[in-house]
Length: 478
Image (cartoon, rainbow, N blue to C red; front, side, top):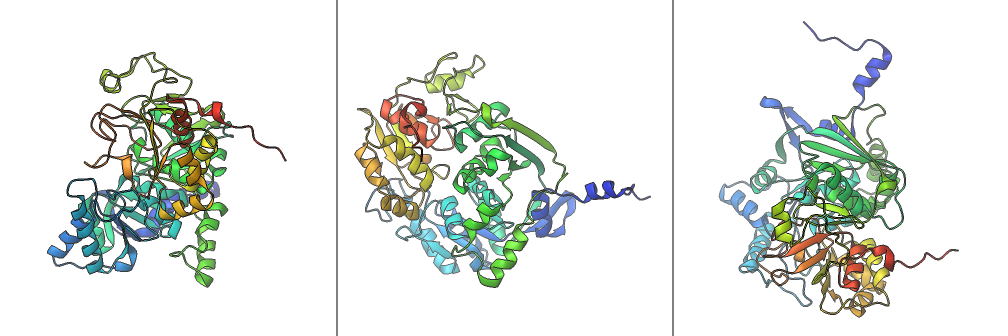
């Protein structure tokens, strides 16, 4: 007995509508598998030195070559030293071996390598869009949970483990179950001084760190489409902090303009054909999602975390909730009902795959110009790529940061996470533009408050957690 078929034309149209996730997924299904999974074609794979050598060496030991080296890229970003004049040496014990072994394995397999001193080196999720490695409609994986950053271009991008990386390298495929779909709409316009970082922190704070579990998120709404590509990457970056499989945004003319002319993007007639195809990558009108969340963008304000999870975040004018977990309060040295504004800080960090792109640095520099950080505050700015660093220096942003008392570094993940290398003194309270504030994330006993680059800059000036709006200069009117 067959199932009921759609009757009217309207019913048939609804049955045929698909989400953006479904469109990309369906294009990449090689074959359905037992247990409800699909064999999915993987277009591009990105490795880094923290785990790249392990996957490549395991593949070699098994006698399996990389299926298509032209689709695989590798970068030194996670544990590289970011101090000027760096080489293979790192502050992480044994870290140099990760670099040298990954370099040797990548060269042996013939994959593209962005080495420590390469002019295109940088954080994987920064350089992939810069170089046009991620493209609308593609599948892209990397052994890093923030690979979802690249969903900002309408790509299906997600993080994997080392064993999955090995399988994908050998076969160009992965066995996956189709995720549920969740549309998160930020409707209306953002208030002045509210940033993409505040948008995603607000979502996680309102709906919990597990709110997106099992779902691929499509971000939508007027506030999303108004963002530049760097802002969209910030929002998608922290979909993993919402426990989502990935986060993505339908490609529009902003995304297509970004891709044009990038090194690994198509050109000529292929580009014209690709653009025509990419313009169709949007959820159909009437497409049904498994869940929906709508947020009024006008209700948002600058956000800052208080605890040990991104969901432990409040508006800058708020207080720590009475329901705050005791363990988080104890670790952070805080109390329920306490305000964060005025809380003394020891250090400030601007960087990471979340907030280290050129517009991030520009906005922070706009607050810092003509000002100096408070006495006793250690402050660092780590550009997300060497291309970002060069562009920032071309605009004189490096001079603004250094004049204000910040250290200006080479690109890399740096103090976004602690891997036994560089850190702040134990017990330090740090205001950081990174994506995670777990216990020990930036080093043993470090108390991390995550926020936008603007809030980090403002707090560094004040010497305590501060509202960035008090340091923002009036906009000039033409």
